[in-house]
Image 1 (cartoon, chains in turn purple, red):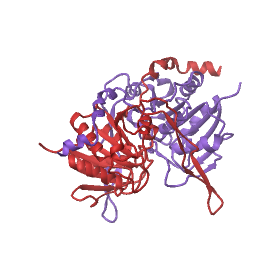
Image 2 (cartoon, each protein chain N blue to C red):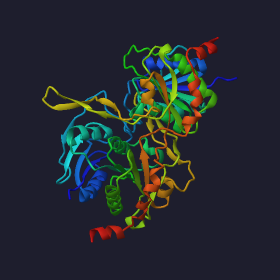
Image 3 (cartoon, rainbow over the protein chains, first blue to last red):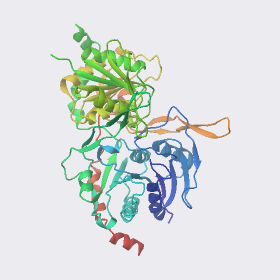
Image 4 (tube, each protein chain N blue to C red):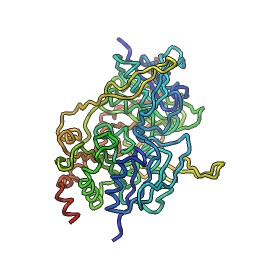
Length: 267
Length: 267
């Protein structure tokens, strides 16, 4: 039986420890091709590079693994992988991460890691974004490897519903203290106190993004609840952002006409 | 009665014709504060500036309108507006655009215009992103103004369900040929043939994002259908990306355990 083809990317850059851990796990389960940014791209969300060209080079970073580094964003990497590197070799699965730091709750929106996974899902490739709740460079990416291996095997075996990706976050715990996996919904949350103010040598003020993350969701079916209670959170996510429940509520908007209603207003 | 406070931003930059048209319409309906990027930020998606500081300056761009330009992304602009400019003045509404070019269907994901609106919705501010299907610098942003005015008035009067934003796309048509508004869902679509390849003066290859947009959705309830048939499309969108239908399908994943299942596999 032929081994599945697995595309691996991330947003912390091709030399980050997190992607090395993911390549270790993935290469046990399939043939891996890595296309990842050549520099850190955290917080890039679903950005694509429009006003500049992008470049891509082979990278001898992982022993025995086909790998490329790209000057663009995580989403650029997935697009270049499809267009230039893989072409007719359609991956069975795309993996992104392991990100250094949480992408739970609304952080999925800012995350280059998850946007890369979402870009793969737009191409019909089942995909998973992984994040570890530890920003340290020497974070322990090995602890959860057995879980990751099983989770990836599960998706290889069962697939994912069309257009879906999984947002997987891993608590900062020794492997044997992780309680298991929870399939959950994205928690409602927000960022507060978001900027540090400082003054440059010319006396001009500047601002640096920081902030306090606030969970506003008391549900026990959320990713934040799962993580706080020692579970790996798995949120099935999607790129159809339509708020279907709101459609019937807005139907009266279709009564707006031109130019009569505007005339009435200005009359 | 006090006038509503309306925050206006965009992704084409504070000097783009599209934001001027939006400020014209909005300032008839409320007190406007503009916080917009000082340079074009198309395709930035939900990117935030993490690795560099951001700066913000007052901008005398719109006669009689409080306005600021920011070095960051559209999402940075909304965050700075909240944190630094508006503080206790919570806007009734946030508007983003009018974007030069379509943000219909999956383009909502790549769009700085819509990501700015989504960032406002994360803060509980009803928000609308506007885009005109015309990339030309001298595009006619006036044609749809009567519709935009009515649409904004509708949202000021009725509000939007919590966490919602509207993705509004305007066909390239004279105002009296626009058939009206359609409330719709996001069409399923994709980009193909995404890069132009070229060679630099040193003989190195580089790639530039381009592509062909493909509608894969035959539904007559989509934004692409509405636009192709002469309507302004209005898609209620949201920042909760959870694929709720997929949650029960994945419950078996919770049976994965540590280290037993991993041991079994390696045995």
